[in-house]
Length: 71
Image (tube, rainbow, N blue to C red; front, side, top):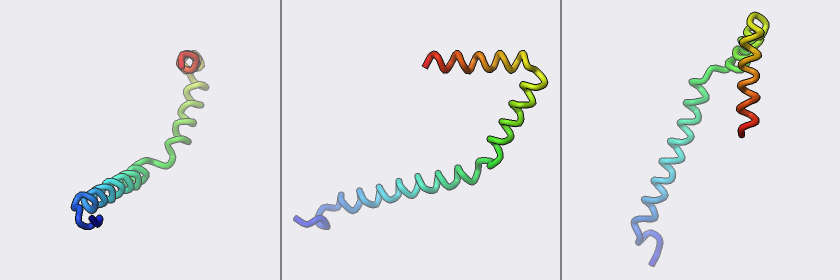
């Protein structure tokens, strides 16, 4: 029995290729839709928060540390 006698082999390959294509297209679309400056913008917002409202910043910091210790 040859592989081309079994119709499930080509169908399985086609399905695998389709899923890989969807995965690649999703990755490309996700990278294009995300904004490049989000890390810098978030860092700047954090610095402004900690400078203008140090008490709120301290609360956020202690919450982050509490979550880290509970992992």
